[in-house]
Length: 410
Image (cartoon, rainbow, N blue to C red):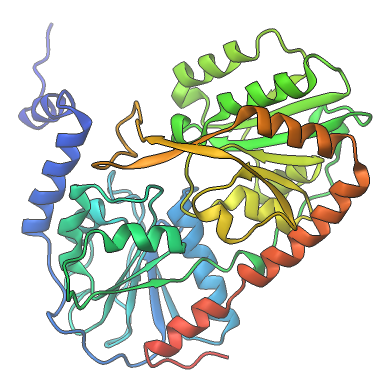
């Protein structure tokens, strides 16, 4: 017996055959035409702040929403939390409309913002200021983000780097303000569990370099192949110099993970960790490292380097994009780079004329050797890193943004 697919399933199958870029642009345009819009002029704020986002998901925007909520509570600001789940799949919790006049901070990027609003409770936007909290990792924005401008009165972003990118969307004289409000990572610093190297199967007598990223984000942007290349040039197969690569969502991206493993197939001193851990154990794994390495091509914030710095670890990172906003040569090793056209095989991180950084692998290898051979230097940089991250990734920008809304913040 054969079964014919439903018309909806058949349409979805056809839809998935279209190229990713045009498909996303079409979805943004269609949903923008259908979704409810906020008041044309932002109404006065009555205090507090409602935070909506992927509060229960392990995503970058979900983490930023949770950190913003923690910061608001620390500042004594009245909050409402709205878990709108994944805007794409529609998985979400029950959402209660916040009090009338309370501003709404939406941790949903512009292309999927209209879709999320189509699934939100009726009347959510009426009579309130709407703020988009957007994350992006290139110096220019794709056209598919432009329709999202019609759904916000202002925009908050992770970094100055992202703010400059968002402003490329705005026409001269646009009333939409763009504010840099990084999540207050230092307010809730990493708290490692009691797990140690032996618990992760790691040697106690080696210098460990640590790389951590999610394959669900962008294999090309995170650039782990450069990390393997720099480790190879720095240490070869030395048993007392170990590279640990924490690769999240490896099962869902088996092809990329296979490429990664093949690149290190002849290096017995490279270890892969693909298990999912809770926050405390994840931070414990990071704390096992002597050096944290991030040869990314671009970052909108750089949560892994930021958390490493708060743990007092020295970081070796590409000296470009948002990570360079909270580290310098006094507390890290910033790696030379050249800018090249941004080419993402998944077509996620692309925009007209956008560029990103290609880190200098030889320079990175030199930095790794310097740090591996000098424990005192590692300690000195790690101590300075903790102080720098605490100073630059605290709650002050959030407090200033809340006051600008007319709210009270300690």
